Every structure is written in C-alpha cells, then in structure tokens.
Image (cartoon, rainbow, N blue to C red; front, top):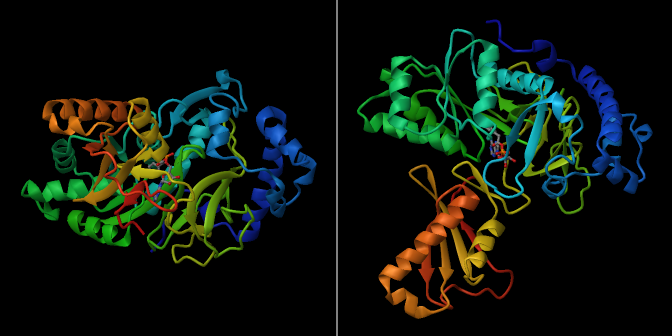
Length: 435
Ligand code: DLL
C-alpha cells in the first residue's frame, strides 16, 4: 500500500542531502542571528566565534548555548531577530508567571510550525477525510494552536474544543464522529475513563488515532489509552522556545519520534560538561532552529534527557528519531501539563511568611496528577484552631494558583515535623513512575 507523508521529499530525504540542507541553513542562520540579535552576538564574541567559523555541521559545537535563564534575562524582546511589526503571534510556556518564556512568530514561522504539526497528523494516519478533535489548551499554550494549524493544513475537519468539560467532549466526539484526538496523554486517559463511566464502549465512537504529548507518559499508559479508546496512540514532542508541538512526532512504528531536522538540528550533550555526545548516547537534547525568523534560538538547552537514533525506520522516513524524554536535567516538574519549578513554590511560601521547611509530593491517581505541599507553621497553636488553619491553607492555595496556574493541596504541619536531611534536602518526592 502506498504510504502517506505530508512532505515526502523532506521526510524521506536521503541523509547526505539532509546534512547538506542543514549545513546551508545553519551557515545562513548564524549570520542572520549575528546581524540581528545583539544578545547572542555578544555571547559569540565572548567565545571568540564569528559566523566565518561556521562552515560545516560539526562547527555547531563552537557556538555558545542558550538556556531558559538567557530567555528570562533577555525577556521580552532581547532575542527577537525581527521588528515587532513583522511578528504576527506570541505564545508562551505553560505555568510560570512573572518572567514567562515568550516566543515570537512571523507568518512564515507559523506556517513552518503548522507544517511540522501536519506531518504529525499524517504520520498518525490523518487525511482530509478525518475529523480531528483538538483538546489541548488554546491560548498562550502552544498545544491547541499548533495541532489546530496542523489539522487544518492536512484538511481534516477540525474541532477546536480546548480542554475541559469532558462529557461535552464525548458528546461532540460521538455526534460529529471524531476520528483523531489530540490532547495530553493524561487527559486522553481521563476521556477514556469517562466514556466508559457514561456507559459507552469503543463501539460508540469512531476514533482511530490519538496524538498525545506535552508531558511524559509511559508505554503502559499508551496501552491503557489504546484500550480505553480503541485507538493507536502516537507521541508528539515540542517546546514553546523552539516553536511548539511538532518538533518531533511518532510514526506507525511507535518506536521514538522523528525530529523535523530540516528546521531543528538536534544535538545530545553531557548536561554537566556541555560536551557533545556521540549518537546513541543518553544526554540532554539541544536544538538549533535553522529556519526561524522571529525567534531563532541557536543551541538551546531543552533540559530534556533522551537518546537520538538514525536506525532505519519501517515507515520510510529518514528523519532522525529521539526516544521519549527520560527525565530532565533541571528540577522542572510537569504537573497536569503545566511546567512547575519547586523554586516557585518555595517563593510563594516565603512570601506568605512560612518557613522554607516544606515537602512537595507529586503523584498520579486515576491518570490525573496530584500536587501536595506540606509546610511547617511557626506556631503549633495554629493547628488547634481549625478555622484559622483552613483560612491560612486557603490563602496559600490561592497564592500558589496565581503563580503556578494549578491548585495544590496544602497541608499545614507542626514545626519540625518534616524530616530534616543530613545531605541535600529532599524537597520533592515524585511518585509517578513515568520512565
Ligand atoms: O508542551 C508543547 C507541546 C504541546 C508538545 C502539545 C506536545 C504537544 P511547553 O509548555 O513549552 O511546550 O513544554 C515543553 O514539555 O521541554 C518537555 O519537558 C515536555 N514535553 C513536551 N512534549 C513531551 C512528550 C509543550 N511528548 C516541555 N513527552 C518539554 C515528554 C514532553 N515530555
């Protein structure tokens, strides 16, 4: 049977031609960034590198890294390579308030991003005859807009549902005969459970595939979602800084995600030393965007740990594959799809007058992430006054919600009741078995 690709000439390009294309684009992009992004130019000058030093792919390692800290320092416009009048869209990472990571797009940037998402939709079996229900969040988060754009490009009938109101999601899914579902894997599992709780079975829906990402999920979870919804579940990866979903996507083989390497050159580095590791070794994923106009990040450290592989794929695509992220090289947690740093929780506690003796516990119950924060009170007497205790906990939940974007469960506990550590303090216990 003839296989379907969205951009076969790129997705199945022979490796030498791909490397040639990447080299040409890289050389051009480094010059473009040097000319248009003084922040990065300074970094290059500090390392005594100029665009003339970049002649082949291996020269990439001469360039300085960018990290989330650079993005915060340069917030909001410091890494912008185009005048704002050329930009048509802003998206932002989930979770953090204050200095969020803000990414800018020109229209060609949006077109490329949507093409990458279209590749993902087609790789999951999507055609113009499909009905694609997008239940990622819409708004600043890239999930909804990205998959929406990809689905449009393929010509699917697109349902821009956003997340939430699960019974209505199921009603639409049934009434309109949705065949592809796009959302976080935890929401997919929740939709599946709700479907069965409502008394339906997989015979009552027409879904055939799902495109799930934005958070870590396991092979067991894949099997569970596939069973609950009667579908094939495909992984999709991406990050706002590099464009959004569609940086890489799974094909029918379901053995890792093909990276759109005509737009994003991946490297794996040792997170401690920054040294580039050979293909097949596990380390931190770094991306260089070689076609972005507005927000062209070079050597951006994703903090995601994974392995790259060029092993031949039965789908015919030659794009290099990455494994599912196996963890992070920083302490960022992804809770219900929202990026959360323990330091944000600590800041809220201290701003609200609590001691820095706290414990963050994350778990996954019925496929939904839970976040519990225990914090010691200064005065034990507060714990005897149920009303005051509840009022304090409520105030803390509201403060957390406004900073993190999600509601934790707060436990006010007695002074000195949280186990002290003799070495590094253990402030986070993540019981979700995600790898
Ligand atoms: O999560 C973009 C996205 C939307 C991807 C929808 C896939 C589907 P951010 O909010 O910037 O962007 O978060 C990016 O999420 O560095 C990873 O740590 C994590 N992540 C994204 N996809 C996956 C995945 C979107 N498939 C951060 N598996 C990334 C595991 C993922 N982690």
